[in-house]
Image (tube, rainbow, N blue to C red; front, side, top):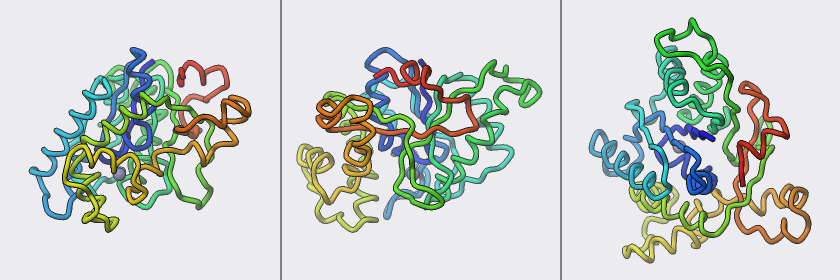
Length: 272
Ligand SMILES: [Zn+2]
């Protein structure tokens, strides 16, 4: 199994699919993260190449912890991603070269323009990866990958409705937070500043790690775990007792423009 998670920024894949990524990588599947921007605006003090380089290093550290194949950042400025033909071609070539069975990305309706256009670019590349005369210098794929959306909290035009909800065991949850912990510039600086809790972030490394996973001030903890939000789905799949005992889960919604996510493909693509 090859999984490709495509986010707009270096930390989006980790937040929404880090648990699945850690679980699959630990079982010797191939997992890669791609950020379509270089993240060079995600800070209140740093910017430009200094910040882009820092975020590249943070992404590499996260990839090592999760055992990913790689964590690539395209050199497109943060906040300036456009669904251009050039970007579509870049993405078509990238997807063809990795040849994933499953792609995860943002939904098209989202507060952040980079998230919206990432979703648009993945949708625009979806079928074209199989068209030989499109970008003919990179061999086309025989089959479309399955494409699913990452969770979000938006309700219009319709709320995120999962086709797959996967439990993440404690060891992989720990590894997911260890990954997020590497994105210091985001989790402990920029997002804390932007959400107004910068003064509450502990200085010590160990206390920060604890804060990241458990403190209600830290919005990530709740956003990244959807076990309670989709409890009914977990109970339906795993039964009353087991479904209610699941503490941590991630969820994914099928996009209609990739290969169909049929029932028989779910255990192959989400082998948990
Ligand atoms: Zn983002």
